[in-house]
Amino acid sequence: MSRPIVIAHHLIWTAYGWWLPNDPRGSTSRTVASDVIAALGELHHGRRRLQPASGAIREFYERASELLKFPLLELSAGDVRLVADALGEAISRHRYTCYACAIMPDHVHVVIRKHRHKAEEMIEHLQEASRLALRGCGARAEGHPVWGGGGWKVFLDSPEDVRRTIAYIRDNPVKLRLAGQEWPFVSEYDGWPLHPGHDPNSPYARRLRGGGRSC
Image 1 (cartoon, one colour):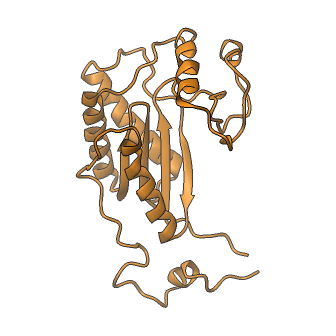
Image 2: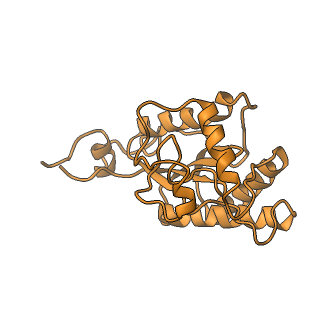
Image 3: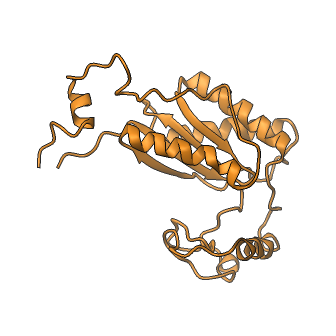
């Protein structure tokens, strides 16, 4: 069967130190490079089927904060606004179309429509803009890492996937009993590329509808 068409990217990255390779919830890592961090607990590749209690996660990062090279910092309400403004500027400059964004105390979620830039380039541009904003306002010291690596990407290959991910991202602040987030750079998803007015007979549309695939 032919490969699915990617129509959007779910991009995720964390603040420095907040999702370590041996995080008790599981991670995408296969190794722990630091022996000091490895001593915090065993590595589990992938998300654990049974998730640990919030107290266990909190205890893990309390211990981790004593071992990391730099302080373990969360994004304050003011930091969130700085990051949002920087993301909005980068999204406008690179002409990305953003369908969802949640800036949490320790991580960021974004959904961006497919673009000539690869997912990794998008993350790099968004991280760089927000890193400069936080440091420029003195919210982070020059030597302190702002983000914890290159993040992760999830390919979304159907309007249903995009809508499901948008709903998940919108719920992120609510789950932590934080205020919902509305950002001016977020566009309402119209079902692209199966939005009203699209060509229903285009090869792209037929493939997304399940037609035109060969086995």
